[in-house]
Image 1 (cartoon, rainbow, N blue to C red):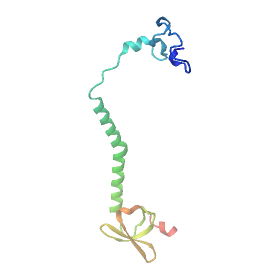
Image 2 (cartoon, rainbow, N blue to C red):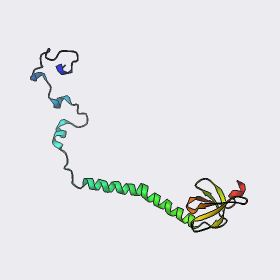
Image 3 (tube, rainbow, N blue to C red):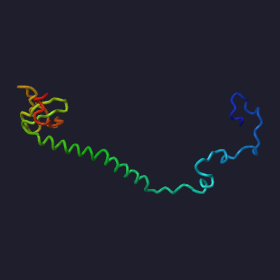
Image 4 (cartoon, one colour):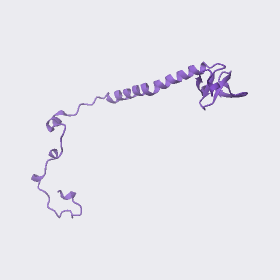
Length: 138
């Protein structure tokens, strides 16, 4: 063992190992997958100055395809749903309130949630339009 690795022994109390008995650093590593001859001959490939830019463009493209595009599609579908709401439609709001549309305005809807009880909500608060007859069975 090397004297520097022994704990509790006074430094300098053991003789230093002669250089002839030490193994070179290249022989201490264990090369399981690549032989040392191939590893030494290969050399690192030259990095292109364009590689960071290419990686950034790939990242932006993946982000667009998996995050931004689906969100834009859902927003477009919701705008179509809100613009198609008419009087008499049965809707559910984001808060979970079920009701029948009683009044349609520019930005607000009047939703009848019980007989004679009409609440006003923003059009964008409508989560879904329900099939006709849903409220009768609820």
